[in-house]
Image (cartoon, helix red, strand yellow):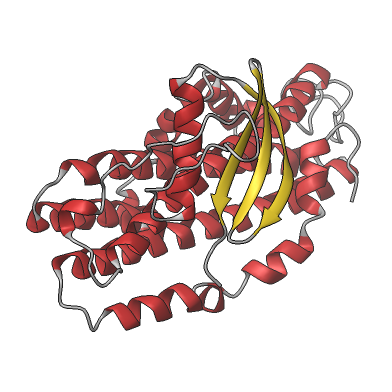
Length: 330
């Protein structure tokens, strides 16, 4: 479905197949859940922490997908309102889109604090307490009984990434509440006069702003927030994978292993991160290497797959680097 002037909105509306794969959350998590049940036989401190961290990560993944699906449904309504020139519905749904974007921003802040805090806890009780506290925040966000997390708290989190969020949200509220602002959507004059109809033409600047805001929010949630939340969930999954190993020790879960060997000048001397324990940790080590060596990546291509490794040619501002990664165990 293509909505003129709305590339992000159109792209989201076209992702029906993706939701058919993601819709059954229990089936989606079956493999990871099964791995944790096998780990239940371990009595180590690391295994117990792995179970708690998996539950925390699972909750957040569910909240994330629920939020994304609601945004998709809002997009369907917004698309219909645009095509049907229904400004009353359009302004209402745009405000709801801002609120749900803010909810994702708030969730992102919870995850950010969690992944920063967990490695600072050295003892099992301290780690478990930290996980429980952050998991409670996810539960509050999902159920939100008695509005324990107010929408203004969420808008504040959004404003940290989108400076105009508060101003735009307040402006939308004026068009949504049953007052003069929303009356302007269908009434052309003062009280007791004028025409009652769609006033899209008269609302030109306000409508232009709404169309811009729709794309701005979708750019954030569909790109920036998606990537950042996926990064945090990936880091949590990596820690769980490490903690599930038979010989894992609590003190080793959060250790950083980014040492590189090789100079990257040729395939034979490709840079590798031999001490990393998971694919995510290996990827983090690669980006850490770029940062430490002040390299800016401009592109990459898969150059070869041999034995247990795949080889990338990475283009940087200082030349091409060969990098090799271990293939995931089958």
